[in-house]
Figure (cartoon, one colour):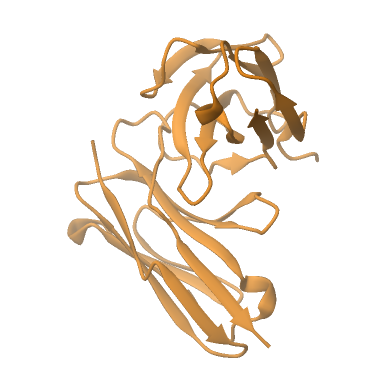
Length: 114
Length: 109
């Protein structure tokens, strides 16, 4: 079975542009979460979705938004990109949206803002 | 929110050596997990270990939930063990993982 898949793997954007990152969870998993990892730090939680509903939001500005589709895939959108948005964006999936589940990460999308 | 402290921050080993990585939490956590991040950035789940001890090959982990810490043991280290090890847990029950800063491990042949 395929693991968590993310696209694109690498991308370069200009300040002020918008970006959309995509994630497909492991088959059968209904929960998708997004994390931002800046170089040299641990990942930081951005959003969690379960059954197409937002279940949690981290301390990120409104420029960050996400959604989950009926097939449980998800998109993360970032508007008005800033240089500080340059990071590895990680998608994670789990069976359910509550504690008690092993969490699996995709390979990430490397975003560079110039 | 909870704070996660990992130690040591950096570790250099010769191949074949053993090591212990520690993770302390400022408050009770659910969902405690250990991850290995390879040089290409992928986070690999090593253990889901809210309490007790688990072993997987050369790796084992122990969590003492009442004392709010977890340990990851690596035995007979190999160069492929190099990378960053993270522990993470959540306190709200919704898979909102809070990560430590990681332990950067370099294993030399």
